[in-house]
Image (cartoon, rainbow, N blue to C red; front, side, top):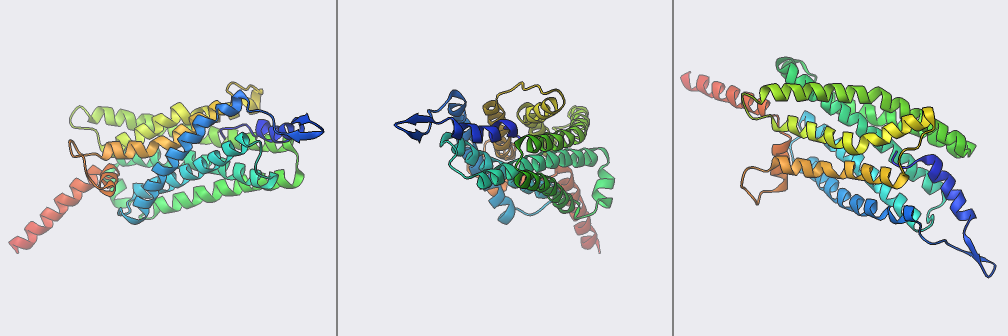
Length: 319
């Protein structure tokens, strides 16, 4: 999403066709300003891969699964996949199209699909956290246990199916114009459907946190969701806005390297948010698994479980 397929795919052919000829043979052209500006994206993608890899390891093997940790696990996987594809795409451009056309299409396919999954998961996380804040009793007692896993599976399958259809159409028809049209159509529809849900749920959660913070400290998990949404609005949202404007009005307001840089920042910052919010006061040396578990804890559920446990123990003692 962060690079126009029209510019990238045309550039893939154009750059090879316009190599400088010296002594009757082709040699690659020099790096352009657009290529040089991809280097910061490459470095950020490397750092983001390390952070999301740590989150995947800890949530997969060291931290007890909770409804929100399942969402965060899938979000880290989507961000890691997006960063990996962005890294390969930057290397491909800096090396003057190191990969073949099929490999390039596969990289672009997974990058677009992972971005769509990341946006969808963030909307689902914000919506579910909003429901848990507005209807705590219903959320605790009536919410199906495997809702998070089911939602994540549906989002991965839906995004994969849509972008796989686009990939097959582009690969077999081999029409860059038609391919770009299909890409922008899917992108704009996906963005138009999910963005209002994300914004409405986040605004409701923000108002709820603001009202509750007058009496006590805001819940850590709500702050985590709001910070993640804020980063997306600043760094990830421009990609969707660009797709809608380009599809409907053919307006290109942002260079491809800037879109890629912002998108890489969006996918790299989330692990920093988790570990920052999970720190406990002045404690410095704590296992990362403890810090991450604390960041993803629902403090209301922890208090309720502690109260129920103490009540049960008191009954057993009295009996």
